[in-house]
Image 1: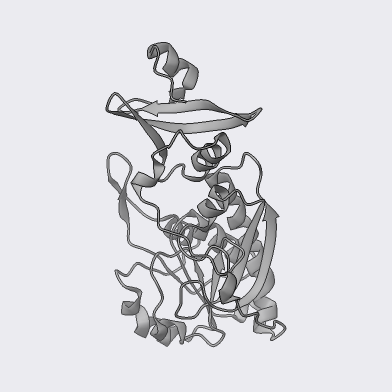
Image 2: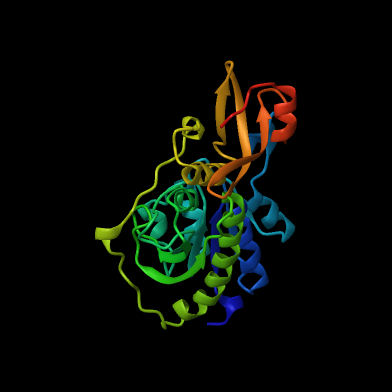
Length: 285
């Protein structure tokens, strides 16, 4: 089947999904429909903002749907008769009724080497745990959470100073390229699915604001990983004189944690040196 004859429905929401969608379109796999989450308030002023996937779809004049529940679009998707549904960081679990619609199933672009790091925070978990490598998995979705059989994977090393945002963005590019390489082989019947080994499966947890509170008793290496993994969300912070101070950036140097920038409560980000000059005897380490 030629690329332009494969009828695809794309489902995704954040920047990761937008990167994958852009690559799909440029790689000759433009979807006939894009499904994304609803516009939501964002930033301190809570301005209603469209998700990145919607912005990308609008740029290419692709039909967009933003249902409160994706099951509400069952009839629409059925009428399109898609060959393939592709999911990249959507935000809702796809029910069985949707999974069963496309001829070649639903493929998910997941930023980890499954079965390690199933769930919502695979990139953060890889950094937090001090992993030396991670990667992207293209998976055939089933009703479980990241439990479906694997079509393809690609590994990459994690940089010693790499932050969540840097690694997340890099995995989006790797995943989008892997996806466009995988689709023709999948449609052409040249891929043998590999079942995941449940014995070594690792599930991640959804992060809460409290997870960002720094425990200074931890080793410099653990603190460095936490600061790199949890910014921008939920953000790492400490509390001094009943005021929250965000720790935005740090680095390891000769086994010691060097804080580079912070953001005191109610103020703009600043270098740690400037913070110390204005707060005598209020070091954070």
